[in-house]
Structures are given as C-alpha cells and as structure tokens.
Length: 243
Length: 322
Image (cartoon, each protein chain N blue to C red):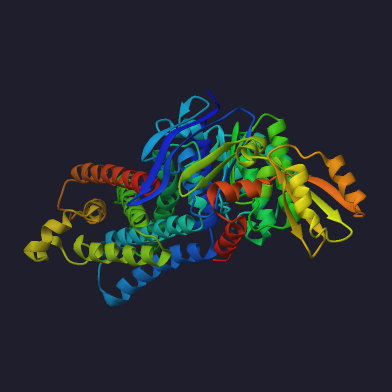
C-alpha cells in the first residue's frame, strides 16, 4: 500500500481543518506577538537578542502543545479518530502524520518573534541552520508532549488543563526566565529532564552565545527525548485506544 | 474454511464478560446477520473482528489473514461501518469520501472517480458539496456506508446500519446490501431488527449475554423450534361446543377466540384442511378464511433467547435518544 498517500492526506486534512482556520492563524500570530511586546514593555532597555531565544521557544511550545492535544481529543470524542485506527496504516505512520501538522504550525509560530526582532536587531550573526534545526527539534518534542497529553485526556477541557500543567512549569524551569544556575538546587535536576531546556540552550548558543551545553550534545539529547516520547505515545495509543 | 472464521472468541472488560466463547464461520458472498439486544456483545464482536479491540481469548481469520497478528493487512480488505457515523463533520461529503480513499492508498484520480460514482449510487450527488454536519441522519448513514465501500472491500462490516433512520433510507440500504452480495461481497451485519435480518440475511446468529444461542438459515432456525402444525380458521359465527368435537374427531388441540370468531387448531401431524371445512359446513358454519400458520423468526428468537423483541427495540430506541 502507498502509505505516503495516507500520510500526506492526513497531514493535509489536519492543516486545512484545524491549523488554517482563521482563529488558529490569528492565535499563531497574536500569541507570539503579545509575548514579544510584553517582554519589550516590561524590559525597555533590554537587549532584544537576549529575549529572542525565550520568545521563540515559548511560541513553538504553546503553538504545538495547544493544538494537537485538542484536535486529537476532539476527533476521539467525535469518533473520527476511530476511522484512522481502522485504516490499513501503521500506528507509527499515524502518529507521525498527526504530529506533522502541529510541527509545521509550531515552526510558523517561531517566525513571528524572529520577523519582529529583525526590525530592531541585526540577525546576520545567527547560524540559521542551527536555529532552524533547534526550532524543529523543539517543535517535535513539544508536539509529542502534546500527543502525550492527548492520549491521557478523555475530554477537550481535560486536554487543555493538562497542557497547561505541563507548559507553565516547563517555561519557568527550562532557563528561559530564570537561569538554571539560579534555581533552587532541588529543582535543577528537574530542569535537565525537560526537552525545552536543551532546545532553549541551542537557541541561546546561536543567538547570544551564552549556552551551558554544547549544541551537539543538546541535539543528541533532544533526539533521544523525541524517540522516547514517540514510543511512549505509540505504546499508549496501542494499549489504551485499541482495547 | 469460510472467508471469516471466528473460534472460541472471548472478551472481558474487568469482571464483565462481553463476549463468551463464541465460534462461527461465514462463507464468501454470504450475508451473515448477528441479531441480539443491546449489550448482547454485538459491537464487542465486530470491534474484535475489525481490529479495533483485542480478543481476550480466541482466534479470528479473514481471507486466511490472522486479524490479531496481521491487523493492518486484514483491515485493507475490510469495509467498516460503525454504529455511529465517524466521518468528519467539517468536511463535505465528497472530501470525506476522497479522504477515506486516501487512507487506503488510492491515487487522486482514482479516489475522485470512485467518490463521484458512490455519491451517485447513494443518490447523494446533489449534496456532495455540503458539510457532513449538515446531512440528515439517513444521509449521514448512507455516506458512512459509501466511505466503507470506497476501496471495494471483500468484506463489509455493518454495525446497526439502519438504526434510527427514515424508512426510505433504510430500504435503500437494505437493497444495497443485497446488491453487494450479488457482486460477491461478504457482509457481516449486526442488527436488532428481526424482520431486517429475516429479509436479507442468508444465515443468522442469535446472540444474548455474550453467547451465541443459535446459528442457521431462517428456515433452519424456524425448524429448530417448530414442532407440529397449526391452522387458523375464521368463521361466520362462534363454534361454541363444536371445539370439543373437533378435537376428538381430528386429534387436534383447539383454541377459540370469541371476539373475531376465529380458531387455531394445533397438531403434531399435518392437519387435512378439506375434512375440517366439510365438518364445519355440515354444521352450518361458514369458513371465511383458512391458513396454515408458521412461526415467525421473531417467535423463534423469543423462544430461544427468552427476550421479547419489542423490548429489544425499545431498548435500542432509548439508547438512540441518549
């Protein structure tokens, strides 16, 4: 069977049905824009490049996790997800197709603060390949975290609540607002268990240069996170949804 | 070996046994009806057969493919219509069909051609561009069946296909099922409508409390409970004391009804009609109607399962309203 046809059509359907809807596009633009403006107003003298890694990471995190958990829970409650489970496509392909749309949406979100920043600071020094790969890895790990939320929730409101349960602690513990070295000792190990910590660190390495870890090591860790999250999600779908 | 073989299938949810050690086989091109009340285990069985749930015990093969071990391979030759329509509300009818075709790896030209063909076949071509959420219940059901047929499956699973829809749509769906059989498709149909099963199924299995009570053709099922013969006569007046005379003369048991001047004669042997008519005529009683009575499938179902069919319908209607 030509699996790529199924993959492409699931992705296209999700983009058309969910991500390209006006409220989501406006959310994708307004949310990162609001975060960016809020940061600029709060710290008028701050160097924009200092804020940029955090704004990119937040935009991707919120863009990906908010959408996937809700769309999957919505499809499950409407029984249309069952149609995908009944199709002759592997569960891995199904998971990949479902997260592909949200990854693209997350990447789109990341570019809002970048475009905004380009009006104020010189971005020529940025290594764009590293930046893009970092955005992609943050989007993948965040999308899979969103999927983990989706497989744990039964209702749309549960998915939204659970998403916030993951997202907000993650923001404060990944070194975006508070450097990890300034966190209480007992919280530091938690920071290193969060994929966003490594994604943010790579972004810092290419935008400001004040990273903690080697970008290569962070990429490696993010890949491991992505693989683990993928297999956990796949396993839970297999055990929980195919009763 | 049939095209579908189910052996010692069992499904438990915690302490609840939904399906309890059932076995049956279905031949290619057969319409097999699975008849039972709500909670009998029909949907649990269909879910296991289509790979949507795992059996606790037992084996299922379709076209020699093990459904449990090679679920995706088996699903490729199945068309599945669940009890609730599961298409996308925000997409139109045509896009829904094309999307379902894409899940089976069909290319754009092929899937669009098949989608147009099915919309026409189901008389939905005028509404193909309308969002699924704007469809009536009957139209939703028809489009869901069309979606299950988009890849021309060898086996079609239909879970309560005519429940809660208008008479015309239900009739169209039944006609379609019969046409599909003529084209060689094997149909597994669950229903709680006895008359529907009686009308279109080649063989029927009665299921109650997770167990198959009886399996066979309509005739076989009727013969399994029908012991003896019965004749119903409608006369111009009440036969009164003649019933005793009738019983003794023809070795039958007679049940009379005062209200409509009718009587039912039952016997282990075939009842010769002419001598009975002559007997009554000689006693100045005119017979207006005489016919041999056969048990209906409903009678058989009630006798075998102990469940009144009207209760089964009410049960389902309650479920639908919920």
